[in-house]
Image (tube, one colour):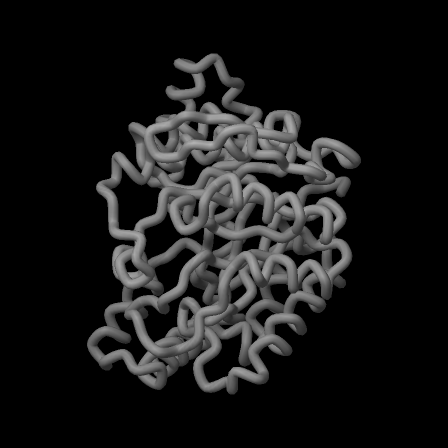
Length: 343
């Protein structure tokens, strides 16, 4: 199994209480820490959002692609991704150019996570409207086609329903797919995120190097079967697509420590401005998730998921900006039991 780590950027209220002039130091410090442990962590990740969850607030949320370039400048080995970029927040030809530039700046370490987008509040607040799901998915598919052509051919032309480009040049192309191997299909590896069964997973079957969807045992098994069916329809080798999932990790040496960490989550969200009822609701949901428990419990769950084909876990630790002891525990007792041998 391979592992990635989300860097706190504020979106999930994970920089609350830290002054803005300290935010970059916290993020950069965690990125540098991870860069020294690339045996354990293959990649670091951020989210592409502008307003906080579980509720929009005035708390910080730092922009994803600015962070891609900045994190690339303070690391040397770890790969860098977004889970996931919203296609409609930026013109896709422009975004393809941005990604190509960041791939060069980072010497071939970019992963492109891309999806149709869902957070209606920030869509409308930023003036993007909020097209129906079918339109957002159509925009995703057209944008992915533009990405592929820009990165593999050096230019793109598309007279689409949602996007029109006419000889948009991408020079230089990304290092991945030119100087470095990268993705044979896309140049920069493409992660199609989302579990929509009729459209999203079909787009993934056609274009993706990686997928990212429901990480529960039952959900992962079902989405995998849907993806497999689309691959068969399109003549794509199902085994050529790496299937990943995101995991909220709450880890403790024993049951009491797990409960204490869940209590910290509740207190943290109340400090961030959520009502006690909303904070309790959030923690109750969190407590049922796959990567919550002792190291042995988490290893058992992830091992079962690995047997189903989930071979890349992208992990999130709510407390990372304040306390890395949970990450330490995961690194020392979970990853060694699951990490891909021979790497």
